[in-house]
Amino acid sequence: MIEGLNPALLLICGALLIPLLPRGIVRNGFMLALPVLGLLQLWSLPHGQYAEMSLFNLTLITLRIDSLSFVFAVAFLIAAAISVIYAWHLDDELQQVVGLFYPGAALGAVLAGDLITLFICWELAAISSVFLIWARRTERAYRAGLRYLLIQVGSGVLLLAGVVLHVRATGSATFEHLDLSSPGATLIFIAFGIKAAFPFLHNWLQDAYPEATVTGTVVLSAFTTKMAIYALARGFAGVEILITIGTIMAMFPIFFAVIENDLRRVLAYSMNNQLGFMVVGIGIGTPLALDGAAAHAFADILFKALLFMSMGAVLLRAGTVNGSQLGGLYKSMPLTAGLCMVGAASISAFPLFSAFATKSLILEAAAQEGHWIPFLFLLFASAGVFHHAGIKIPYFAFFGHDSGIRCQEAPRNMLIAMGVAAALCIGIGVFPQALYAILPYPVVFDPYTTTHVITQLQLLAWSALAFAVLMRTGIYPPELRAVNLDFDWTYRKLLPALSIRVWKELDRGWMGLTEAIKCQFNGLMRILFLHHGPHGRLAATWPTGSMVLWAVVLLGMCVVFYYV
Image (cartoon, rainbow, N blue to C red; front, top):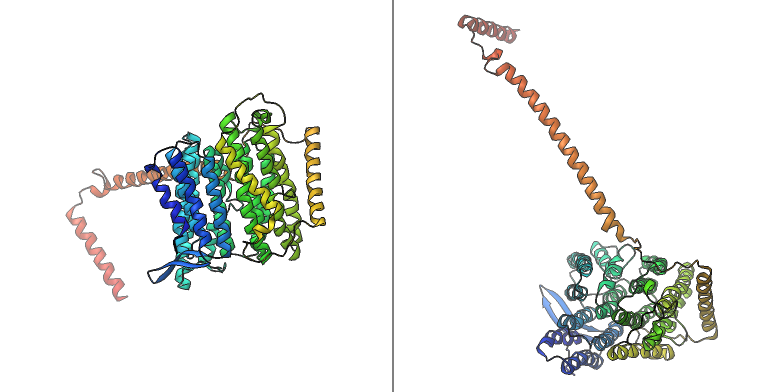
């Protein structure tokens, strides 16, 4: 392979060449070759810094490979390859180009060794990814894309402001651990938090991802948020506020996901939940916790892509992903149903599936450091994710009541992509040491102890029993066509309504003020006209003698005052 060549350039430059290639097997083969060659290039480069350059007395490191960036880069390239296979049936140049350009930009951010290169790739990823939403070519997708772009570019503006302040304060643009007490680092932290979907900053995810195309949602699920997780792990490992933030992130989406009807939106909430585990690991900051955050990000990219791919196949064939309209699809789509079950088992951390081997690293690190309250909340969140992603998704889509929908199985290329992701999910679960070997720190942990396996099975069994009881008793929230209000209601509905009301009141007050001033002015003009008008007293003709008399009186008064 080429010494010092950034694998991200292979994806970015290669994506721009796609329209020049003939449609069909040649283009599809070229698209798949790009992430494969990128993975080979990444693997061939020793850890170190490459492609250094100087700009305004600052050293830019456009390619840095170390133990942290390597594991995220491998996951990104695998996800890019899977998404290419999943989209082979498409004949849409826009999605084909963006489907590789956007992963290339995200990969460039992960491999960036300085904050300026990070910012450039950050913005390239934000701007390119919105076209995966707009490619659906509906009014809802257009509006959701505008909101998504506004928030993503806003994150970039904050990042740029933070970088400028940080460089002025330190004289260096190197991307390393940042001191949160400085203004620049604080702005950078908020920028990362927006991308990572922190609480109250998260709604762009549930708003935009379900409105993307069938294949676009799969691509979006893998990169933006994981790019932010990497950035937090690189810049803010050990910042304790992240433990609280991550715990809240893991908890609150459970309740929204349970009542949500759109199954792709359920998975978007589930993404918030899983990101919370990673953020907690970063906040703990120990080697085991950071290993857990990186490992769980790797696994989440795969099983979340698998679940989004299965729901995308359902949307393609059935025309909807609303739980209230689905059910019984296992009869028409048995392979998709089986692969979805693998993704559900993986995200639920069943033994022999991926999250069992990755999530346990974070929980173990929390226990070792004595963070018992977050530990207990994360256990509850683990049970909750089994409810909404492990059970709800396959149950309402493929089982449950029979909706009567009969359709074709997913296209072959989709099944292949889902099969590859499912195989990797099982492979990580069965052979966790293979993933542990590429993590940032040496892992001395065995997830398959008797205690851990039995504890996890008990947690899953009680969670399944609770779901069954709630369903049998009718307490479980039914799948209804409804709009669930989240925090974005405050700035999409409440604040605009309040601003309109405030503007009307201000306009009414201004009109009243101007009317009062006008009345006072008219009154003053009437008084002036009364005295100075053509018939006013001051306009009358005075005799000369009277004028001389008054002049002498005034002069006399002045003389008296002067001498007295």
